Amino acid sequence: MAGSLRLVRSPDVYELRVYVGRDSSGRVKHRYERFTGNKRAAQRALAALVAEVEQAKEVEVEPGNIWSPATTLNAAFAAWKLNGWQDLSPTTTRRYEGIWRVHVQNSIGLRKISELGSYDLERFFRKLKSDGQSESSVHQIRAVLNRTCHLAKRWSGGVLPNPVAETELPSWSMDAARVVRAPDATEVAALLRACAEEDPRVAAFVRFVTATGARRGEACALRWGDVDLENRTITIDESIVSSRGGATVKGPKTRASIRRLSIDTGTAEVLAALRKEQRGLAAMCETSLGDESFVFSFEPGGTTPPHPDVMSHAFASLRDRAKVAGDVHLHSLRHFQATVIDSVVSERQKQARLGWATVHMARHYTDAVTEEDQKAAEFVGRLLDEDRPQVGQESRQKA
Image (cartoon, helix red, strand yellow):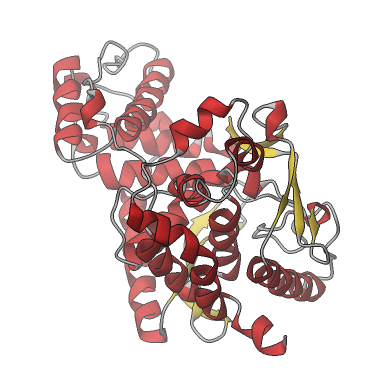
């Protein structure tokens, strides 16, 4: 199977391309992925991607040939990909495919639908839980399985059942739920250092959320017209939310969420460097970057906002590379903001800055502040600036 790679940004960001076949009209189809690393590592990643595509094609068959008691979950999922995924967004299909490949394909996916019962599936869900999967992850896996079997039942004319429909998920106690906590100053420093190796948009996104405490959907919806670099302020008045088939720009969570915030000099310089790069990319693609363009978009010209889930996954990868504890999530940076400013501004000012509807929410979001945490709060400004050269080094040197 053909595959190729090309350097898309120096020194070490490659685009991997693998031929996957032709569509119904005969047009060639490729699968693309980005890889960060040296050329040898990129070649290994390309080989793995080729193998993955080849393995996926082994279970792809025409729907008309598979509906029988011998139909497996993998075959039914492949049929859904051929007939239905065209209506879904690329982000959604990537998420579904990742769920299936990681959790289903080489385990219960090999089983025949006609031989599966709710007992088998509930054992599968409980094993996922015992393996450390979160409640939300198991819910998503069940949803994809349910859709696959629902379509198989319909397309087979009732020959196949939907064994997922009658299943119940395990229960998660409050103690088992993952607690989102505020990272400490050392963890924040490690995260910002790791940003130096990240895509500039992701690095700027993490810096922005850390510096402002903005919700991930609010940061994804930020447009260049909302950014006043001269006065170092930003306006938050929109949010990106997940919706069927992708993401949607909507109004803020509450009326209190509409707000104007100050940003520090370092964050302003990081955004200025990002805008310069985005303008250059837009010019190369013969488009432009305007006030309506999304700040952290991955599209030339910023026409499409980043999906919040994509940024969360990018942050998780960044966190793992920084060797920061797994209970620190993207939303933890909002808790960090609430905690470190607790001793330097009034409760009402903190409420306004973070966009809470009530002062009560401020207490919910603030971790207990010890003496050491007080010192971290005083140090936070210098902490972010110390890491800034690695995030926006070019911008700082020119300044």
